[in-house]
Length: 366
Image (cartoon, rainbow, N blue to C red; front, side):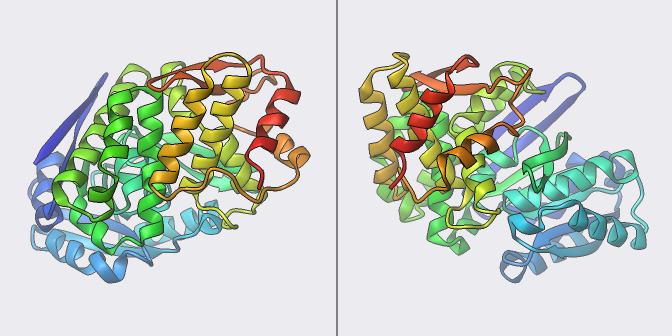
């Protein structure tokens, strides 16, 4: 089993990566959460896509270790990633009489983890939190680092908190039930990590695309572990996104605008929007002279290699630009963009002319 330790001031937890690890999830929760060492209550929040495949088995494994488990099934939809869904979950936890020491466990993709994490952060002013990500995107990105949140009509994840889990268990065997499109979406975040921090990972993904697509266990474990190590290192250096952690937003400012103008759940999934956003950001960087045009070609080729889009049918540029103005990264009215300087390094710019950003949008329009 690969284990990545994430250590922060006053809090430490492990990200465990292996095939079949969910079979012993009850034991792992008891070991990671001292307040239920001898049993107690817990909530398992899963989503309607995952519950038929893994929900019952995980709940049974928790109950076998003396955890009286309340199961809550939530919609797997950006449209339902709202305070309304959070309120429904609060009610279930209150009815189950969960106390402050009882953990909330999430079993699902990024939406489930974000919503369940926000519930854990705010229920009784904070309860223990365990993440069991079931999508590649959640394993390598959303489950690591403590970001939780919900959407508003104005944009994604505008309401939320930082709430670090007590344990993350990434069982790569569950990826066999993941739709192929969702696997590709997770690879967008993996390629992003390569662009911002590790050129060797970027090249490794391109070279091992067939093994990853075939769900070969050694390739999946290495893929998840290497990406988690990058994400963990960035989070440990900048937990609250005051500096370096913003690098993880490469491609996302463009991507969130694509998603917001599609009314959350339109033509492009998050990973697909990120892929298009990464090409737009690389193109912008090249036009600004921050990187060579070969960087754009390498990013585009890597995304194409794993089956991700590099351009799309988008909302009008004026609408996209306006939506970017609501992004969380805006500071003092200035849009902060993460732009590559080479494969393996990025820089933040807040002085890019609107005309240049508009041109980048046009460059990824079909």
